[in-house]
Length: 421
Ligand SMILES: [Fe+2]
Image (cartoon, rainbow, N blue to C red; front, side, top):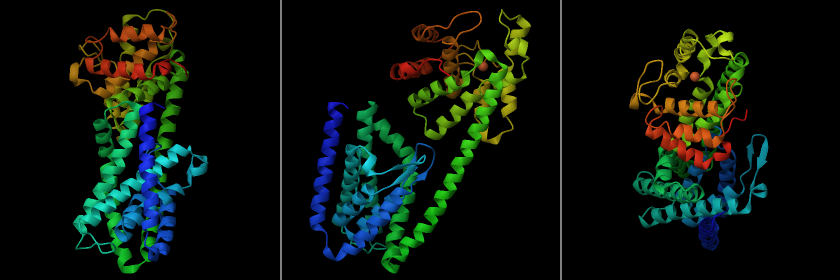
């Protein structure tokens, strides 16, 4: 951990813990039973996040925290949100995760950033004139502004942490976070304000009204994730079938997939976008399935006819994938993975910006892995040799934009730039 990072985490934790302690003393004793119930509800919601994909999850606890601060005020809100987060128990791939088996500084940072965000939102609501437990329609605008303050603090504190961990620019992290986070935020802010109003009218029944749909939505997302995983497994099986036929490219698709992910990260692609590029990487040579084995596995030099036959594989791949609606864009990336920046590639001879960035990612990952693998007519190049060959192809085979991404990805993940499957 860098000195700056330790300093930042210590600062957030010091502010958060002071706020929590101060809030505990400021709590209205009449609210104790409400606080206990809402802490339990927040902890249950924190423990049941909705997984959008394997890495990104959304916690409905945000709506509960918002409800707590609007209903009871900033002090109670901060205590409910932070203790609710402290008590979370999650099942991650069969492993139980809770505060007891999480590094203490992570737990402290999480509860502190939540306490700060909720407290700031609660104070904003209070100073704008909003009254606890009476939102709609009189204080709706104040409640919406308070929700925005919560979101700004919450994402801002995390964005600074990511900046210190990854060295990316603060704004680019924040904008990326906003890109996929805003819709979730709007939805959860709406739920939080609605829950508060229903709670004011009907009491604790409101929690039940929102809990049942939450479980249903969670189940739907889980099914969706399992479906995506089975697509991925099927594609993997198809790639293995191809590699069984073409013995020189054993593990090639997996290596291309791994390098493509690093390049997608540098390009700032979202998780969903990266997932499609991963699928394209696994399928980029699927068109070779139609090429006769003695050409694919020929150890010596290929004749012109044989080479022309191999050059058909991007089009064959495109044809194979074109009827799969789920792979709408992937088919073009597969088709263009042998195109060159200067137009000397195949099959269509397109050039410059006509080549999609995703196809350029596949191309550069494909070439790098081919260079660092043994071939019947030559030994594998070293990582450094392959890097130099690729960088020297700027302006001919590769565009300046993809070379820039490649250099950055290589510098950050040098150890992984090898053929290892
Ligand atoms: Fe290819």
